[in-house]
Structure formats: structure tokens, C-alpha cells
Amino acid sequence: MKLLLGLAIGTAIGAVMQLGGASSYRKILGSLLLKDMTIIKLILMTIAVTTVGIYALDLVDMANMSIKPTYVVGIIIAGLIFGVGFAISGYCPGTCVLASAEGKTDAVFTLIGGLFGAALYALVYPLMAPLISLTNYGEITLPSVFNVSNGIWIAVPFSAILLLLVFRVLKDRYE
Amino acid sequence: MEDSPVLSWKVAGLLLGLLVILATALVKPFGVSTQYVVTDAIVLHNAAPSVAESNEYLNKYGEKADWGIGYGWMLVFGMFLGSGISALATRRFRQRKNPALPAMWKEQFGDHKGKRLIQAFIGGMLLLFGARLAGGCTSGHMISGISQLTVGSFVFGASIFASGILTARTLYRKRSSS
Image (cartoon, rainbow over all chains, first blue to last red):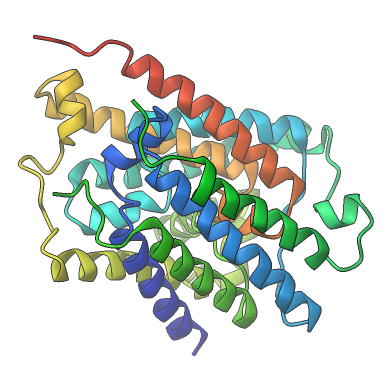
């Protein structure tokens, strides 16, 4: 049952992302070159909606949250590595799956490269322990840092700022 | 043209947000990169069970689902299906002249299929190595993580865009005129 649910939600997510242009090399590189804001706006819009939704669910105890630990140094290094891969391939781990399904063979290579990258990480995982324990503040969120018991008080203004950004500040294209 | 999306970022962002909220209400927030490890774990467990079980990291993810697929894997498989279906339905399946070469890449680097595929492969390796070190990718950290207001996810988001922007600028620093 849960497998079918995963398949159903995944199919809907895949279709929406594909229709939104998330699997387009030009759109992703356009974002990283700060010329075409479509994908950046799509991500910010998604986050604006989701943040309020999750913290509204949380008010009625219905949010199955999963907070990842914050280890600042390790995450910065990880992000720098990820960013290079992002710009070189023009995909991310999810969008290369979408683009593979569109028949883009370079995306299939990114997907296979990803399987090797994950295997490589599994191989060197014991060596990564210091990076994960260094500057590890545990599962912290903005509400927990600012000691706000109902996260919705931060979620609403945060989403409002994002909506202001996507609708009023950011343009679609820059030259 | 693959360059003009069927759905605007407003509609796509709203729908995607609603789907992630639904997933969080029913099961958990959405993430992709873990499933690369799960796939590796399943493949290796079939080929060499003892090697897979003795690797601490693969064991962490493989054992949990009894070395098989679970909800998260089906979700990513669903993404593949959903993208394929919508691409076919909107006549965007195999739209490129050469399926391996994005037009924009070709303008900058030329008609070199092999070079592009090697780049794509190495890019994929870096993506997943980074994502596993961080504990998530664009979906799990950026979208789901920031939406839960997780501090580390803001750090990850800033770091990937700083590095991605710098790398993209280096790659596309001068438009070749030849």
C-alpha cells in the first residue's frame, strides 16, 4: 500500500516538475548564470507554499517532519562539491531522473555517475566522520534556535518574504 | 521547444508545494538522493551480499528495507514515470536533435558527444558524493529542508548556489564565436 502511495505521489511530482521545466539543461544553467530565473522562482515558490503548509500541519500535529542535522563545515564542503556537479552536468539528483525519462542520454549518464558517486561515498564513509561531527549542532531549525514554540509564527513571514521576492523583486530574465 | 515550460513557475511551484505537503502529512517530506544509496545497496547485495552487509553506510540503508525497495524508491521511480508520461503527452519526448547534447552546451563547447557524456557522468558523481555528505540534495535539503526551516538546509542552499554559480560562470566565461 505504501509502495503504491509512493508511486502515485512520485508520478505526480515528476509530471509537475517536468511540465515546469525543471529538467531542462538550459533552464538550470540559465539559473546558475543568473540570466533565467524560472527555476529559482519555481524552487522559491514551492518552498513558500510548503513551509506554511508543513507548519500549519504541525499546529494540528499532522506533520511527519524529518529534520536533518546541521554540521556547518561538512555541509558547506558538501554544497561546494554538489554545486560543481550541478553546473557541470546541468542536472541535480532528481532532475536527471526526470530528464532520463525524456530520452536525454546525457541525463542517463548523470544518473549512472550518481550511482557511482553514492557508492564512492559509501566506500569512504568512515573517513567522513570528522566532517559530520565537527560543528554539528544537531537537528536545529529557525523556530528551535529562536525558541519559538509554534513554528507557524516564523513560517508565515518567511513565506511572505519569498512570495514578495518571486512576485515583486526578481525578474524573469536578466541580460 | 524544450525551453518554454508548459506550466508557469507559479502553477508548477504551487502544485509541487501541495504535493510535498501531502507527502509530509501522509508519510514524510520528499527527498531523492537517499535512493541512489538504496539502489547501490540492492545491486551490491544481489551481487555480493557479504560485501554489501559489511559496508557500514550501505548497511544503514539496505538493512532497513530488507535490501529491497521501499516507499522512497517507488517515489523516485514514480518521478521517472510521471516525467516520461508528461513529456510524451506534451510531445516533448526526445525533442533534442542529438539526445546527448543540450543546444546551449553545443553552442559553447561544440559537437562533442563523448565530452558531454563524460562531463555528465563526472557531474553526477560529484552531485551524489556531495548530497550524501550533506545528507540530502535539492529535494531533501533545499525544498523539504528549508520548508521545515532547518538551519543546515539554508547553509546547503547557499553553498550549492555559490559553487554552482561560480562553476557555471567559469564554464561559460566566453562565448565562442567560431
